[in-house]
Length: 77
Image 1: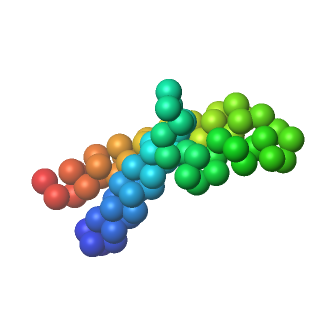
Image 2 (image 1 turned 180 degrees about the vertical axis):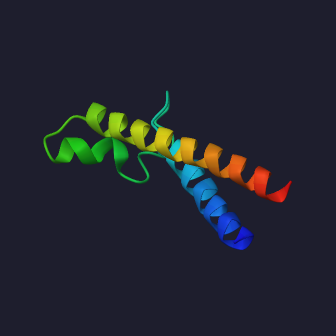
């Protein structure tokens, strides 16, 4: 059971790091490398919508990461 929780925790860690790096900052960060910034404009949409959805996904993954950290802390203590 603990091994499964650790695997899920590691997956959440990698996802959270990738999502944070995808955010476009002052200098566009790594989002241009993955097509986050320019992909929406190619389809006629706005990049603000993509950023808003990326922010929502990042918040959800961050909350899951926090909850998993709490659960692991309780399970291992």
